[in-house]
Image (cartoon, rainbow, N blue to C red; front, top):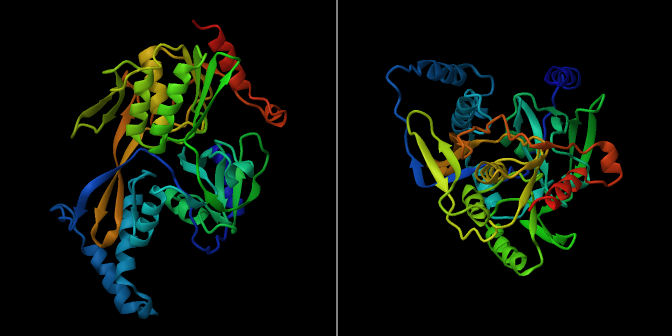
Amino acid sequence: MKEKIIQFLKNKFVYPTTLAVCFILVFGFGIWIGAEKVAYYVQEPDTINFSLFWDVYNKLQQNFINPENINDEEIIYGAIKGMTKSLGDPYTSFFDPTEAKKFEDDLLGSFEGIGVEIGIKKDLLTVIAPLKNTPGQKAGLKSGDVIIGIDGKSTVDMTTDDAVNLIRGKKGTNVVLTIYRDDWTETQDITITRDTIEIPAMDWKIINNNIAYIQIYQFDASLLNNFKIASNKILESNAEKIVLDLRDNPGGYLEVAQKIAGYFIKSGEIVVIEDFGATRGQEVYKTNGDYSLEKYPIVVLINEGSASASEILAGALRDNRNIQLIGEKSFGKGSVQEIITLRGGSYLKITIAKWLTPKGVSISEVGLEPDIKIEITNEDIKAEKDTQLEKALEIISNLK
């Protein structure tokens, strides 16, 4: 598929155009924000010679036709961005002070954009999940869609952060995404009108009199209180079994996923392992809740839009309780990013570890394979038929 998409890109984006900057939120990719981590300088390694950098800088100063356009600060920022891009990791990136401020604003809650989680998969900019009741979902975007263009600009070699900067923008303005989907014969341009995005944490209801259906949309801080209220009501209800829906859940905070796991898994069991490599070893996160929902039989729904923290919870439930996963293979976002504050208010977001399931299996770039694979077809969508949920209800009905 990748070769076919690359050919589309070559044919369609020969002359990329200059665009106005606009943003969406890349919400919850296992980000850990370093407290009071401030870097003031970087010591030059003895084995590295930076004279070439200064040679180029001096040549620009001496020979560039418009020297008044040379901005030393922008040169430094551009060089740092090139440095992070050279690592080949789509989640390691540099934010200049303006970008860092926007990133901080996003973490506070609502924002203006299209409400779509994006990431890099097989070197292609991909929709992880269109969030519930957002312009992206209403426009028909699906998990797994490949974004090959943003307002006519090719996404080849584009980082997720750069894509965010192009897609998000003021409420009421439009962005055009050029989309490729597996079962399409050609790309399609989808125009989406931006809006204020406010995403619910979860919903739940009783199905078939005795099945609690819990749908978690994201692992943000508000989920903890909402889930506590919901769990108390479930315990007081006629519910005897649980279907946990993590489809199109792009993730969120690791600590929130850890606490939610504590409702379903006995205290002291492993939720996830952070593997920092040979230099720092591993850190283990365990459950510490009251496991009040541990007594219920449960199945879990996943799909291509299940990423990061949702994969952590699904993996923990399967490894600890042999709970069946139903649906489609998850996204495979299994890395941890740390935010380091630099001088002038800029940020460095750097991948520092990979996540492993309790049994030590990496989900990075691999994802979780469902125990029962069910795909939702275009015919199912047109008929408004959720075959994955139907299968989950069938399976859970037979569990004791």
